[in-house]
Length: 79
Image (cartoon, rainbow, N blue to C red):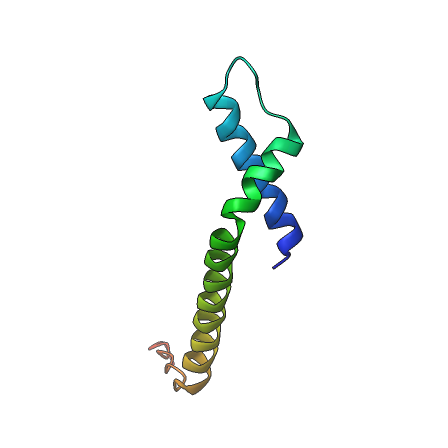
């Protein structure tokens, strides 16, 4: 996970929200970054938890597929 990209995605979301809020003024990138920095720690924690969750799921899927016995194939009755 690249937190730099996630940061800019967060800034874009905040800017979009602020632009809707202040229709007449709009919102600059600098103002959006200032507002996004307030909520970024909470958002970053969410992203980190999501990454850990996904890592656990992929590890579990690998162990389940590796430990399960192969499924026997049905043989054709033609022979």
